[in-house]
Amino acid sequence: MTKLIVRKASLDDVKDIVEVYCSSIKEWFKYVNGRRVQARYEDLGVSERFDHGGPWMSIETCSVHINYLLTSGQYPLIAILNDKVVGELELYIGYGRGVLGKCGFIDVLEVHNNFKRRGIGRRLVYEAIKISEDLGCDTIAVWPNHFPP
Image (cartoon, rainbow, N blue to C red; front, top):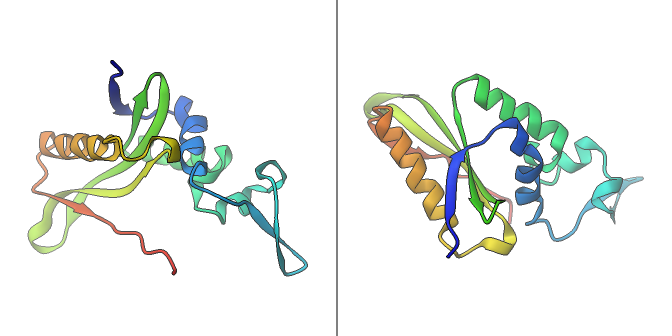
């Protein structure tokens, strides 16, 4: 029986977090002379990797991002299955306008492509709700991400 563990991420987890986000990319590419060409991940620069999905796409930028979350008292959570990081959720605790009050904002949720539909995302959300309640949040909110068609 495998056990899913959810805990706060550390800088030691950055490489594994990057792997989770990169698992959903079907094709890496870059622009050469204004033309989009297929490329290997290893041949992309930091900014070219960032263009595929933000700071989670390279160790360099993800390290800065996770460090910022940790030093500002926020909650990057990771899901671990059989000693492998298989998901990440970022929970921000703050104050919303109006009726929101103290709020837990779920900003990012990603599950490794090979581990989807196993309840990992659900478990990460459950843990984010529990942390928010333990910290006295009045509400939980989600910041949706809109992708172009």
